[in-house]
Length: 497
Image 1 (cartoon, rainbow, N blue to C red):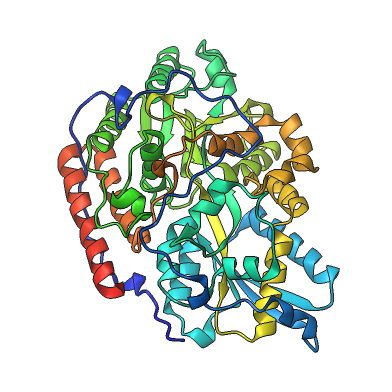
Image 2: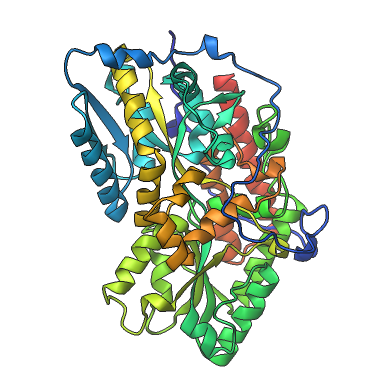
């Protein structure tokens, strides 16, 4: 079968400025603001995968010979490329060691590539013979990975094995489904949440159990915090491509019930352009820019360490009371605080709330990563890879994974099992991200965009937002950013069809 690889690393990015016009943030991008916020739930909502105008028959894709493992003569050796670090890697190692010890048929070797970006670059630049058997890829790589024509779709294994996915979160399944095919298995699911210092909230006369839900409340609470002297800034913002400069923009559009790109975020047909240079985008970025200009928010830059925004909460001289970060950081943040690294801040002081957004609308897009089976391997290797994937996503192992990391279990039945059942009961902070995924409206805007050059488009958006946070004209910057993003999409489509 012919395979081609996306030359993602060869697409050049132009440094941009960023901007937008006015309008009320209260109604940005919303057909009608919700009168109430849906209550938290531990049952998965029904997510409608937007209909696709192009459907790829499963029979035209590589098959998954699930029966081949039983006939394997000896232990099947697997290589798994991943991007987990720190406590997340430790937990993945624990699960993999448990799998290796649980049966004699398969042995998995983990190979840490250093992070998502390094994993992506190595995969796209490697020839077929140099690829691993299994690769972990972030959610923004769906279209690019599909277009490499180098994978066995997970749906082929699901069908061949009669595997039941009804317990999986529909939103997680829909994120990795295009052309009516489930391409990869959701594994580590996350979404952005608000981290805040309860002690600072109390010192500012705010209810420490009531974090801001809307951007208006975010500004009002930040004003109270700064005016009272409880902290130097209300919130620490950043312009990282996988956080405040890229991923969060997609999240805010979803909360506003606005599409990030045309053709239902690329779900009904390939997107031809981005839509972030809309009134919704202008309103959101203008609002945040003014918070920085008014001294209510502080910009920590591109957050290259992935920790700069969190460290600002512990800044001894000019701290911030809040920041937005991935729910996957929760376990690590609590572990660091518990270790006493930041005197004066206790585990009990760390509050978690939904990510504030336009109108306080609930919901979030699926973040994190999924597992991709590499094609071109011996039948027993493909079957063994599928067997390992099934192990990682059992209800019990997803319960253990979520409790240890802060990731959201990819299946609802995991919530009935310890340790996550106990964790959610004893520490509701871990459940905020799970509930947030369930509360999104059932609409195309609630399923993340699938753009071939999504990785590059996020980099463009990050540079655009960095300029906005530094005071650039919002409308001009958004227009320039959209023009560059559209050029990337056009170039990708010309190359990949």
